[in-house]
Length: 209
Image 1 (cartoon, rainbow, N blue to C red):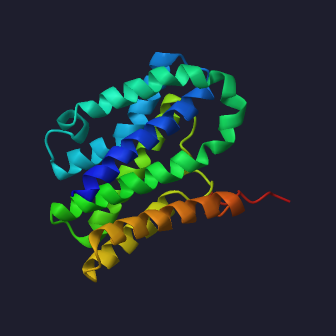
Image 2 (cartoon, rainbow, N blue to C red):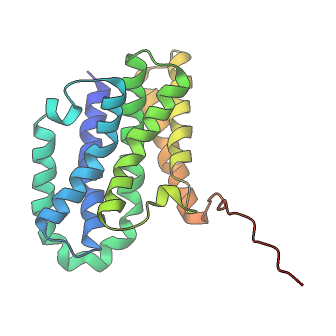
């Protein structure tokens, strides 16, 4: 059983749901919801495939993926009445989708025989840049680039846990689950206790006396 394919499948679904929740905050119609969900679900993986020169792109090679995202977008219309309830839930599909995509990106990079650091970096890109595109479409500054609860750091840590366990020849499914758990728990803790890096700012000009 190819566990990476299963995790990628789940990642598409979870990320699309996050895209629905993100778009619903802006009051978008079904096409807007589909655009945001599509960007969130496929943005990071598309960049990964381009960097690794993988063809066709993973969502083109699996045409049922865009169809699933479209179905989720259409179904989103039934969630409008519950918008006030689902807003606080954004962090959960965000964390899970990021974790699932991070591990698939890292695994594909290792299959392409990249180095460990590059594999972890491509995992982070796969797990986080869909959310960046979603924020841009929603006309928001991507949370990845401003002081906010740790995001890419959680992804990076989970990728290294996965890489370390595979090098120790621990069963692949267990390595995947462990990496996912680290990312999700790390991300939820960062949101809960507002762990973030300080902003880098140019020193204020001295005031003349």
